[in-house]
Structures are given as structure tokens and as C-alpha cells.
Image (cartoon, rainbow, N blue to C red; front, side):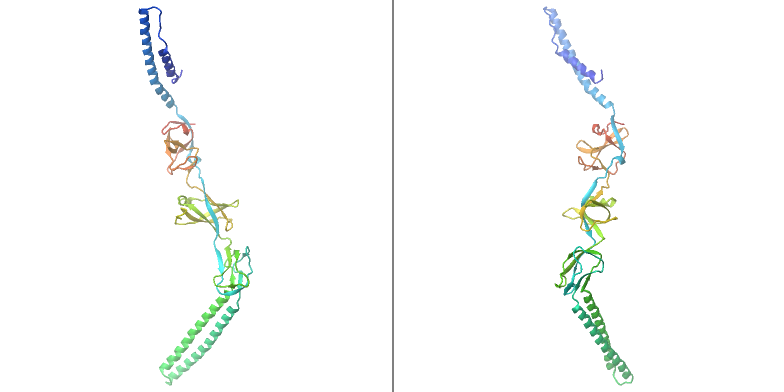
Amino acid sequence: MTLAAAPVAAIAAAFAAALAPPCRVAARGRVAARGGVAARGALRASIAALLAASNFLPIAWVHGAQAADTPVTLKPLAQVVVHPLRDAQASVLARNESRLSAEIAATVVSVPVDTGQTVRKGEVLVRLEQADATLGVERARAQRDALAARLALADAQLARARELREQNFISIDALAQRSAEASAMRAELRVAEVQIGTARSTLEKTVIRAPYDAAVRARHAQVGELAAPGTPLVTLTQLGAVEISAAIPAQDASRIARVNDFAFEGAAQRYELKLLRLAPVVDRATRTREARFAPVGPAPLAGAEGRLTWSDPRAHVPPEIAVRRAGRIGVFVAEGAKARFVELEGAQEGRPAPLPASLAGQLVVAGQHALQDGASIAPR
């Protein structure tokens, strides 16, 4: 009989003896008296045995349960932890998206491009009427030529005045007047040269060219229309140079500098990314910070929508390893032959929970449900 079974048997025997009816003898007198005394003595002995057995039972049972170490399975922390995948909504943005507008008032003569077409840098997109601009250039040149002739005359008169002054035929004031006239003509000639440059610039503005390699997103100009300054003519999206924009939750933003596996997933394709910059402010409405990324290798098309994914740099414990003790969720760590319970702050049942950065050693990955803090363990 085992240690735990002996008290149980003693209790059963005591109860049987206590409940047995007293011996009755048909004879009267001393036989009956002796039977009553014997019955009462047997009852008292049975009750004493019952109390002794009941006091011994929990002690023996607890001692028997605690005597054996709990068998558990241990694994190094590095073999257990996981890094959950995080994600956020992301958009692919062109480095430049421009609405090219007219800078002068002129009639649209031709639009050699259309929506969806790709163009190279410097390619003609729209041509405006050039007649007025050409006349402006010729007018500025004529004014310059006239001023140049007048300046030549003023220089000749100044030279003659200096000769006359050397002979005392004119006064110093007369010489100064000639010198001022020549200087004024020279200044007016410089203004005329500037006007020519302005007229040429106006003429160049009658031809709208692509500022970079781009795709024509929209064509607004129509042949024969009068384009006023500021009128949109075409919309371009720059090709090649794209950035991926994503709104990162504020609680994750402080850790993304340690992440090296960013990726954009969209249209059944995956593109590796690198972090360019993180906005130093938090959006009050969404409690997020905008992050910009650049593709490493092939790039997604501008305008695409998808998800930004990355692995949480913090080590997490799988949910099946965590247990609940006294209302707290945590894990058991082996410390010698004992198991120590470590609470996981902010842990939720059924979800991976971040481990404290200072935690080290081996985790109990099997048998942890039978453990209490400080229990003896037997690794298997």
C-alpha cells in the first residue's frame, strides 16, 4: 500500500467501526453492561483513529506531491523568440508630379503629346502662337540699335568737347554736360539689351517642354484655345524616381530605425525598401508619423497602393509558451533547478508578447502549465 493510500484505508476502517451497531446479548445484567461499555470504548477508539488519519492525510498527500520534480522541456531563448510581422498602408509617390501651365497669353497652336504617352526631358509638349513674341524681340533689337547710334554720337560730341576745352573754347560745365549725356546713353543701351533678353524669354515661353522624363497624366490644352497665364496645359508624372509613403503608428516609429527588412507588397509583387526619412512630428488625427522609403532594386509604379511590411525588432515569445499566474501573463525561466515566473508587461492572451530586454537563459517550453513560481523542475 502506498503512502497516500494508507490514510484512506485507515479512515474507511474507522468509519466502519464507528458506525457498526453495538453488541447485543440476549442475557440481562452484567453481560449487557459489559457490551455497552465495550461499544462505547470501540466508538471512542474509532473516532481517535479517524482524527489521526484525517490529520495525516493532507500532510502525506502534499509531501508526496512535492517530493517529485516537475518534468519540463527547456530551450535557449534564441531558439524560441519570434519577431512578429508589422504592416501599414503605403502609397507609391512620384518624386515630381507637375501641372505645367502657360506663362503668357497666347493661342494654342499644337499639342504633340497625349494622355498616357511617355516623353523625354526637353521634348515639346505644347506650342503657342509666336507672332507677338517674335515682334517683341524685333522691337527690342530696334530700340537697342537706335540707342547704340545715339551713344556713338554722344561719344563723338564728348571727344570734341574735350578738345575744345583744352583750347579754352568751352567751359567746364559744357564739357560735363556732354559727359553726362554720353553716360545716360550708355545706361539706356544696357536697358535695351535687357529688354531684348526679356523678349527672347517671352518667345521661349511659347514652347512648353518636358522638365524631366515623364508620363503624361493628363492633357488639358486644346488646339485653338486661348491660354491665359496660369492655365494648366498638361500634367506630368516623373518616371523612375519614386518614393513609398507610409503612416507608421507612433508607438512603432521609434523602433523602425533598427529594422532592415522593409518591403512594399502590392499587386502580388514584393519590393525591398530602405528607410529615407521619418517625419519628426506626429499627426494629431491618426497618431502616426509619415515615413518615406526608396526601393532597393526594382521599383513599383507610381500611384500604386499596397502595404508596407517589416519585422518587429523586439524579441517576442510565442503565445503557446505563455501562462497565466495570479492574473498575470508571463513565462517560466530556468534558474538552476528552479522555475522562476517572469511577467510580460502588456501581454495579451493568444498574441506574441515582447520579452524584457534583460531576460536571458532558457525558457520552459513544455510542462509550464503545471509549474508555480519557485517550483523544482527536472529538464528532460
